[in-house]
Length: 117
Image (cartoon, rainbow, N blue to C red; front, side):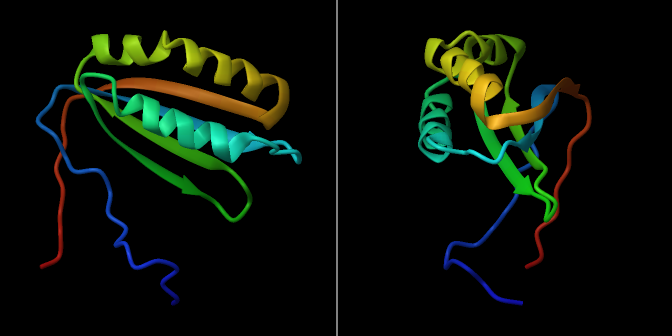
């Protein structure tokens, strides 16, 4: 098993419930021109939202990408959803980058974690 970077990979920590998660699953189109720059910009922008707790991202070998954003409350999630740059990126995603996607929003009622020492 190769390690592609020196930065350890860890999931976002468990938080004291309740909090919210936004789970975005997507299948990309062939042409991803401009996507990585926009994704990096969105990652920077969401960090400025009061109540943003973190983000996990994974991609399957078949190409399905899964991004989970964690938010302290519904207000933080609403602020992110209504951000003008984020809304523009959503429109570009529908027009260019996604073959399909699904968004699931849920209130977390139970959360715990484990870290091997």
